[in-house]
Length: 343
Image 1: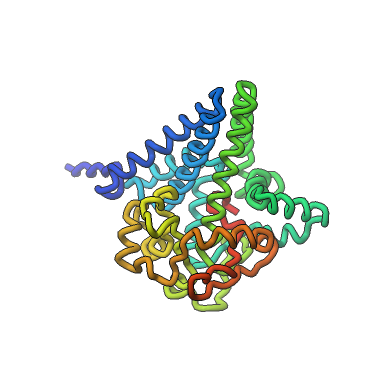
Image 2: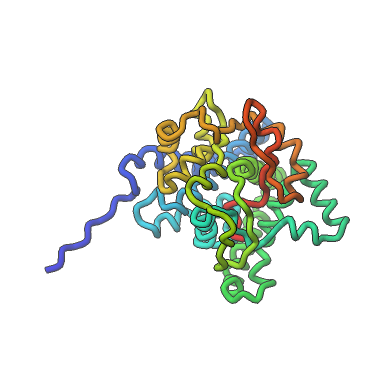
């Protein structure tokens, strides 16, 4: 008589029960609580709700990354279900979670930023007035490039000859219809709440793009989905670490890195991609320490994020990281490398 298969535990790692439960509960309750506060009469409560909602979306987005690596649940299907739920919360649900995961895994395996939609080529090909409009929006801190990428994910199944993408037309149309109805109801109940929801989502996108901008100086390649990255250089583990940066929220107060679900410990993540988020600070200390050359505190990046915000939109050059207290002054950063868009 066959021995019944042993039931897998819910979480992949035994020490994940408490941190994962708390973080996921905060994400869900923060999303719902923040949304409820958008309807309050008090402007102070509206502001609190907008920030709470934005942060819940940020954590949901970083949980998508965790689910993609399979570091939360022991059963892959559970990671996929949770990833799809967080995709709805973060507004990336027009792309299939499996495609988000596939794109992100290429980033790790190829040690490159592999894209199928080159925003810089797209922008340079626009009429001058349209390009100036995008640049003007970026100057005003509106994440226009990310908005274009999210829009491209929506329209791609309807404008391509690729059968894989064409087969998703019905799914994308259904998601679009459901979200349109939800936003229409939200606007009918309170136009203020709808506008604040949009603001919270834009805050999320801006925070994610700031973090993404300074975590790699990988080469970017616009390739078809299954095309290989050119073997024009040695992309080994040494290359990976030298082109990866840990843009920590705070060196003095490490707990603040929890605001981004420890995603800023990026060198540690790339050294052990399946290590769960709550172990990354310890892994970082064991492997590197805060004196590691690849550590750049976010406070050192804020001025450059402002100063180079137009250059990084149109220029392929990521800039350089030097040495000393001002080593990030000429680090322009990347744009359009979000793991929330599967293009």
